[in-house]
Image 1 (tube, rainbow, N blue to C red):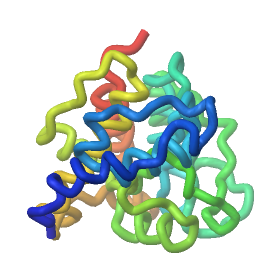
Image 2: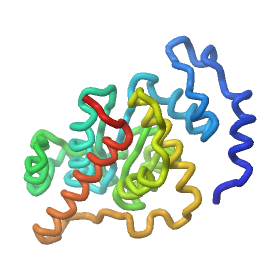
Image 3: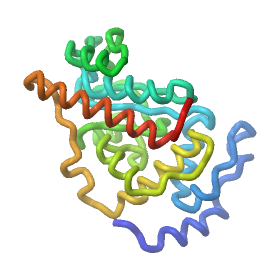
Image 4: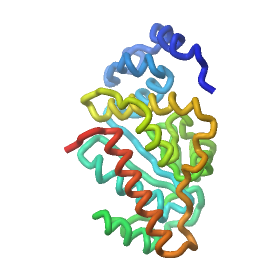
Length: 236
C-alpha cells in the first residue's frame, strides 16, 4: 500500500541523496523532479545503469516468441537512441531458434527475427536494467528472484501500458530522462493497486491455434511499440 508520508519524506530525502562526486564525474546530476517523486528509484536507475544508456530486458518462458518479438518491436522504435534491448526466457532450453509463427509475425511488422537465439535467465544479471518487462506474473517473479531485477523497475507489458495512460508523462525533452522519470511515476502510481496484475497477462502461445498465436503476437508487438513511444516520446 502507498505510504501517505512518502512524498514529504521524499522531499526531505533530497538532502541525503548521494552527490555527483560520490559516483564520479561521468554521472549526470539527477532531475530534482524525480528525486521528489521517488528518490530511491531515481538513484537506483541513474547509478546502476549507465547515465547515457537505457537498458531494457523482456522476459517470457522460452524466449522463442513473446519476449523475442517484444524486444525486436521495442528496439525498432528506439533504434536511434542510446537504448539496449535484450530478451530472456525463464526456462533453460539451449540455443533454440524462435518459433516459426514468431518469425512470421515479426515479418508482418517489418521486423527481423530469424537470427534470434534463445537465452535463459539462469546466467543473467538484470540488476542494472533500467526496465524489465514480462507477460505473466511468473516472469516478473523469476526476473527478480533469479536475475536480481529491481522490482520497482519490473512490469507486465499490459500493466506498464495501462500505467502510462494513467500517469502524467514526464515533461523532459531528453528521451532517456523522460523514460526514467516516467517509470518512476508509474511505479509510484501502481502501489495504490495491489491487484494490478489481474487480467493483464499475455498468455503463452505454445499449443494454441494459429489465430490465437497471431493475436498474441499482435498484442506483444503492438504493446511493445506503444510502450516505447510513450516512454521516449517522438524520436527520429
